[in-house]
Image 1 (cartoon, rainbow, N blue to C red):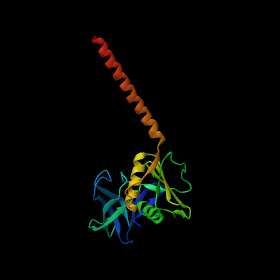
Image 2: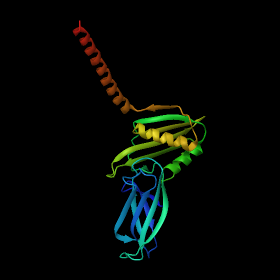
Image 3: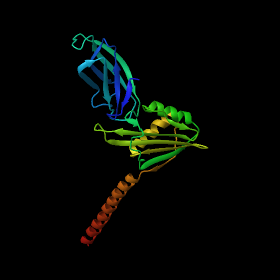
Image 4: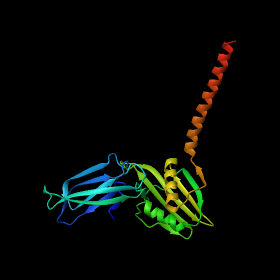
Length: 239
């Protein structure tokens, strides 16, 4: 595969391998739809050209990205006459999320969304396989499936966690554990589109967001109380 996970750098890399007689001098990644990187075009040059190179890929948002890759290669490391190879690469929608290993922090996310689906377990498995870059076999059995992912910052710190748990029963009981509402919405919307679900009843639990909402609600209540008091004071002053 051209896309491989670098567990040391905590990101996905585009891996290019040529024959020993060729040297990669530079590559250009063109985001054909825009919005995935800081710029629509990313140039990567190599101080020491060689037949193999690895380019970190960190999309700014969770979306399927179609990249056009240009590779500039020469017969020697000092060549000035370069050949250009061009080919497309598709980034999976959630390629920022790396599959957890036994060494990763397995503390479950605080927030979650749960819902039920009609029996389409194979469709759920296909969605995971096509939407993420897997580095191990999925934990799939007669009881269902569980898989854990983590997205990291450039510095290697945990940015977001995503757990997907599916239990087989009369219906499929799905639990999406994550750290924020925005990610939950993106995951559920993408899943429903993949398996063809247009309506879905769900139960959400976001304790941190509810605390923030309570603070805002308190500020609104205080604002209305102050406004009512000012209105009453103005009415008294006119009498």
